[in-house]
Length: 331
Ligand SMILES: Nc1ncnc2c1ncn2[C@@H]1O[C@H](COP(=O)(O)OP(=O)(O)OP(=O)(O)O)[C@@H](O)[C@H]1O
Ligand SMILES: [Mg+2]
Image 1: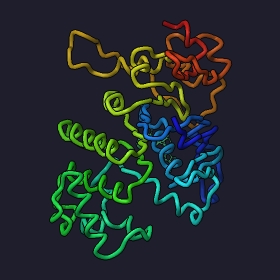
Image 2 (image 1 turned 120 degrees about the vertical axis):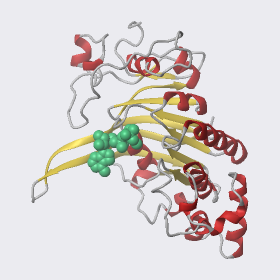
Image 3 (image 1 turned 120 degrees about the horizontal axis):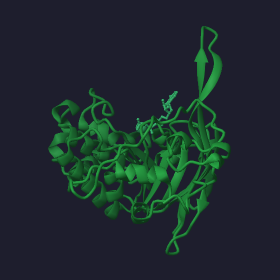
Image 4 (image 1 turned 90 degrees about the horizontal axis):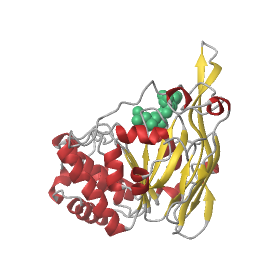
């Protein structure tokens, strides 16, 4: 498997400012030292409760945000390795042609004053990839590919339903044939029936174009369906990371177990839904031990005193990372 990103100790801390002088009184540790790889052509899922740092991670990887520290080594299409965390906007121009993002809300992510032609064709224009009639041809072709009629390009976003708008957003992201597509909750605002169609579309397009996906959702069943591997985040850190099936069959972190148990099952007899106890932690607080300590029924004195490291317990020859002092013995 070829690596496309090597993320090391990535941190994004937002300052908390008070008063007229905007004195910095603390930090929100939205992403607090995460290390992981992304492999070419895989779909890497990112799950966790609201506020755990999923979007912040995505925004750092797409370089909408410049991270506070850490590195994001990216192997570009010419085979060179660059640290995205350090590049200026000017130096990032090549990257804008290689990575695109799809956002959660297709109502606010599409400019209401632009026609679909303008919305979808814009990445070709601003990145100097095509102009004039060629843009129109490519917009028509990609609209058809995402299941919309090419005549729709003359219309404005308000004429479309949520699902259709998300198809427009997908067309806009894919028109430049990016190597990487970062999807931040792309189906969370859609009806369940429409969700399935959009996920199928994303899967088909990936097979066709061979892109790498980072797919974010707070919905574990959606992530399981689309992802090859999954990262579980808690309070700005990675608590578990492994193959999708392995995560569900053999979760090594009590938080992952709790997330799986909290998924409602279609068969009411099969599983009882157990809500995760307690409130998600506070990202502005500094934790001495494990940040999941106060919510974990398996926690010991060691968990309160020392933060666990992310350790690999390989299974069937594949990596399975977990950060829990009792990964091997809490079950
Ligand atoms: N621009 C910002 N300034 C200050 N704090 C922020 C900013 N963006 C996010 N945060 C805080 O950082 C933490 C992580 O937020 P983030 O949006 O990355 O979480 P998330 O996992 O995407 O959550 P959700 O599932 O609700 O989308 C939260 O506590 C959030 O309030
Ligand atoms: Mg988010």
